[in-house]
Length: 127
Image 1 (cartoon, rainbow, N blue to C red):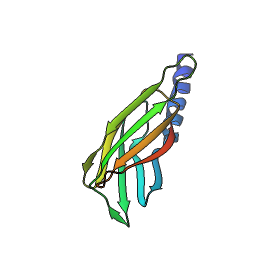
Image 2 (image 1 turned 120 degrees about the vertical axis):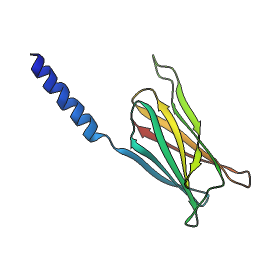
Image 3 (image 1 turned 90 degrees about the vertical axis):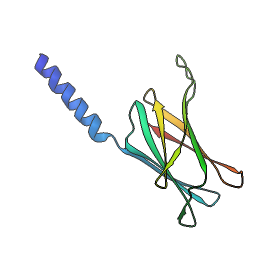
Image 4 (image 1 turned 30 degrees about the vertical axis):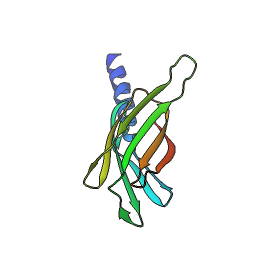
């Protein structure tokens, strides 16, 4: 009986890992092309996200980037959020976001340009 449970658990874990996909979403806001990627498949816990910004096919490196991931309050579950400010590393903005549970997470990705304008992109990811 224990062997059957181990086999079923092994199949479940294998199927879960094989279906995990790396996040990659593209968007455009006010002439800026934005790409949001994860360095690996999203998991419950800490996730490294990579953001690239370009305008007129040139990488933009002079903006401040931050993101907020949140899950609205639901019956029996409180509102949850995680946010971080990105740091620029070799032309890519990197940040760590903690997603404490599975489900649909909404996000707001904001970047402030040199002229003081804050641009916001909204979206969602499934975990």
